[in-house]
Each structure stands twice: as C-alpha cells, then as structure tokens.
Image 1 (cartoon, rainbow, N blue to C red):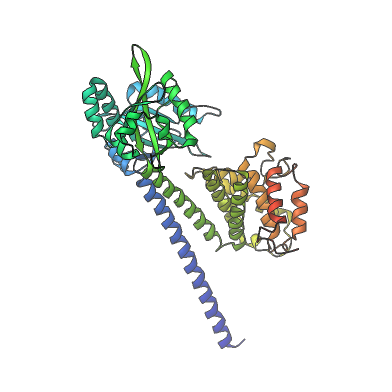
Image 2 (image 1 turned 120 degrees about the vertical axis):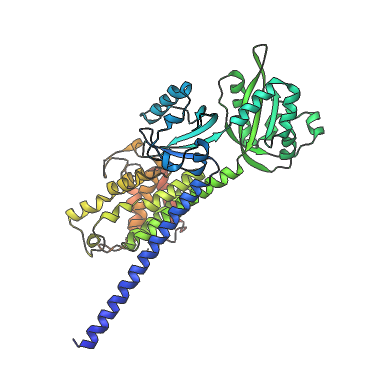
Length: 476
C-alpha cells in the first residue's frame, strides 16, 4: 500500500472517530438538559415536595420545602428524617402510615392532614399527598400548607357576621350547603369564578351543578360520607362553570353541626389549574428524558434503539384500543422506550454479530432483563418501568425468562409489551438473522394466543396487522 493511500485511510478513520465523539457528546448534553428540565419542574411545582427514603431520610427537596421548613437544602437532604418535622401528637399515626405503606398488602391513606413544626417551632396545618415510587420503597410527597384555611374556618365558626365578611375577602370559593346539597352560602369569589349571579343563587343552586356530569355521582357519595363522619377531605374534581367552562379543583370540607347532628357542609374550593400544568410539564420531562436515553443507546446499538422506539409506539396503540387511561398510556410508552436498556451491558460484539449466536451468547443477551431492572429500579418515575424492563419476556405459561412467572403474575403492561416486542423483533432485520415474514409473525402470535400471549392483546395486534394499519410490515 502506498504511503498516500495509507495517509488517506488514516485521515478518513480520524474523521469518522471525530464524528462519533461529537455525536456522543451531543447525546450526553441532551440527556443533561432533560435531567435539568426534570429538576426545574420539580423545583417549580408550586408546592413543597420531597423524596423520602425507606428509613425516613429526606433525600431530595425543592425550594418550596425549604420555605416551609425554614431549613436549607444542605441542612435537609441526606441529614434529616421527616419525623423531625411532625408534631409529637401526630407522630405515631404518621409512623404507622409510613410502615404500612411499605408492607406487602399494607394499606395506608395517600392523602391526609397533619401538623408540621418548622425551624422556629411554628406549627402549621399541612395537607399531604404521598405515593410510594413504583419499584422502590421511596415515597414522593407533596405538602400543601392549609394553615390559613384552617384558621379561616375557625374564624368563620366564631361569628356569622365575621364569617361572611372574611369569606368575601378570600380568593378561593367558600360555600355552605344543607344536607340535600343545596347551597346556602357562597362568597364573592364563588360568583366570580363560577359565573353565577345573586339571582341564580336566590332561585336555588345545588352544589352538584358545580361539577361536570361525570363527577356528580362521586361528589354526591363523598358529600354523604363527610356528613356521616366517614369521608375524607381534599377530594379532587373537575369543576364546571355556568357557561360550561371547566377547571380542576380540590375541595376541603367539614360538616356543619347543630345540636350534635350534621346538618350540612361548609368548605373551600381551590383551583389547581397551575398545579396540574406543572404535573404535565413534569410528565413531559419524563418522556423527554426517556426518549433521550433511547436515542443515546443508538450510538452504541442502533438496532436496540429503533426497536425500543417502535415497540413503545406499538404498545401505546394497543393500550389505547384496550382502553387504558392517559396516565397508564404514558407509562406504557416510557416503559417501551426503556424496556431493553439493559442491553447497554451486553457486549457490542454480540449485538452486532452476524450469524447465529451461541448458547453462551444468548445467555448474555437474556441477562439484559435483569440489568435493565437494576438500572431503572432507583428512578423516581411514577410508573413501573423497572418491572417492564424485568418481565417483558415473561409468558403466560411460565415458559420464558428471567423468572418464569405466569398468568396473573404478569402485569397488563408486560402482557402488552410482550406481544409488541415479539411482533416488532420478528419484523425487523438483525445482524444474526433476517426479518421474518408477516405470515411467520401471524403464525407465532396466533399459535401462542391464550397460552403464551394475552388473548386481548393478540386479537388487537392481529386486527392491526391484517387490516394493514401497521406500516411496520412490508413483507408478504
């Protein structure tokens, strides 16, 4: 080989290496940007938020939590447990909830009130929402300071005149109603927010008119429970205005007692539109992060990256036809984007090997399910994505890996992913085998219908394939 040719080859190799390094750096920067967006959203939810470890240590807080407690993040994160902020009279109840929430089959409320003690010893009334993060024993909590609401209620009970004057000063809707649900009092904000006039009120308004029709049965049931002393406050609904407009809200209510008997309810309606928008931004950040991770894998293994994206899209289509709600569909899509993330630990020589794999090589490939679980189990995603990575190869008859679970042990998300994974994988070319024909794919899922694969998911997939709705299939 001439020196000129060798020099040209080296120059070309250097250029290709530089391109690859540049693309990797761009992917890393995109991932960092998604993580930054997630943290920004967490910081700007509008309420105090914290991540609680199993041992009660607080591992992450936002700025609102600093304001609520009077401590800085540096003084809280990894150094303080949530028990340090709970009023001593509420502490045992809170500890019991914390324990039960982590027990197998244990039940504990996810929304309740307690008294909070800040750095200066001030006692605050808090409405807390808490959920255990799927696949972990960590909790994510949202704390709303309702001290002013509580104080307002106490003031209202002291004097009817002061009650009405004060209620008219509040920006939230304040209302009272009798035991039949008829409104007996509403403040100025109620009229302004809901669009009713005094003459509407004088003619008689029922509280159920303030909800969309789909929420009215549940609202009526909760009203009766609160009247009986069995219901919980802080229920979430979609409110409906006189002109048909809607907005999300939370209602805090308590019974009106006369001669030791409940005769009605009084409460406050809080518009949570901004909080909902913040939650949506947070969910979009989760999706951005998952898509960035999936794209980043493409620089190492383009087959896995494109496979994950197509499985995610296919699973979302199947989930829609099954009737999953928007939250579960988002979780299913993210689970699809990340279900093969464990292949990042599979040697590239195996992923790109032409020809059949040996048994030993197949064992290394199959290990991706457990590796994916280990990567995802510590994330704070509000969906069971770690379980999807671990069990998407499980089959109803217990014939597959990694644990050979069967039947109802396999979640609906994994039943959907399992079929979509097979369909997409068979339809795509791999270095070690060519793409399968549509006939072969149909034979596989029809043959496993009800034995290996979920009947409903298979039927949905068959309909989409046979009707030609999937561009995925180009072979005959």
